[in-house]
Image 1 (spheres, rainbow, N blue to C red):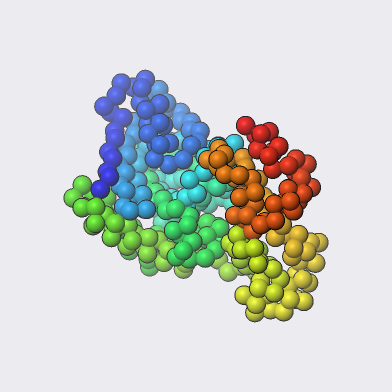
Image 2: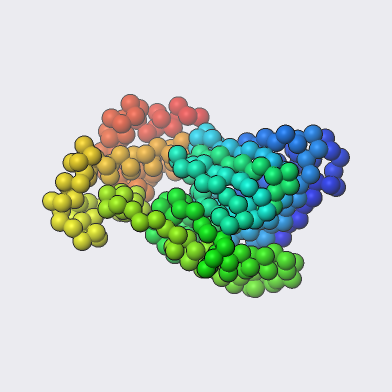
Length: 309
């Protein structure tokens, strides 16, 4: 089972911050980091790979980390990340929602849109859990919805998850590959359970839009199926979207085109033909996809791909 430990004390003070940043980025996502302690950055981390689940314990002084839209376009591992300031005060801001963290409150964020996070302690103690978005989505729907809810660590499943993570990290060098995979499943079950109990109650329009986003790859996605999934009439569904000055079809098309735009801008998909990207997001008619994309972004898919390189 893969395990990594690192402490900046093994390096000379001028080399500590850059070494830490390179290692932390390699084990999380590309981002920018600043700290008022860069001249003598005293920090450490312990990373465990448990199947698809990655747990990391970090201690470091006050910091600010930001991930930009450009970095998202260049590299997106499509991960959901649990963040907990178990010994300190911290915060995260993503998509206009800001969550404060402390030993009693954790949060979720994802790597597919820009974010900013920070810690304010001279020596903060933090814990993260990363899970592929597809793995999380297979366990619980509405991943985007879950990232908006603070997670309470001082009661219920939060207490159980906290104790589990502490125990797993404390004995991280003793597990076999098979044991690590099983512990990853247990970690995922506890995290999903905690997130599910914390999920906020949302309005019907918000639930419908979330459903649409999670089924964009289905070419048959349309008003009848959406209405049936939410136990409402097609007429009422259209009325909901009329109140927001859009149609169901235009919303679906806009969301599909935006996902296509993201993948066309992502170097990881350079070998995938533009028409295949369109088909992946439910736009299976290549000429129609090209026309719709040009109408939305004033460039063909191929032209857009070249423009962002």
